[in-house]
Image (tube, rainbow, N blue to C red; front, side, top):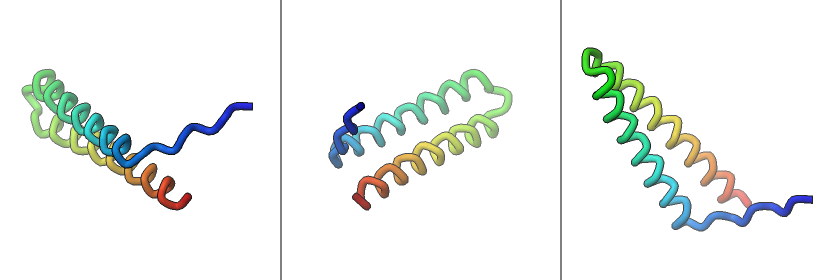
Length: 67
């Protein structure tokens, strides 16, 4: 039987949030470079990625807080 994973600390959650922000910024830059003719789509896609990442982090933090 597998052991449950240890509960992440607040510092680990903050580091994960920073890592997600870095990924979103890198994705936005890549989209701007790749889609220079449609920068509006690049902004929309990076905003969608940021929203999904933040919702996942908030859900994880809420689940951890309920324990």
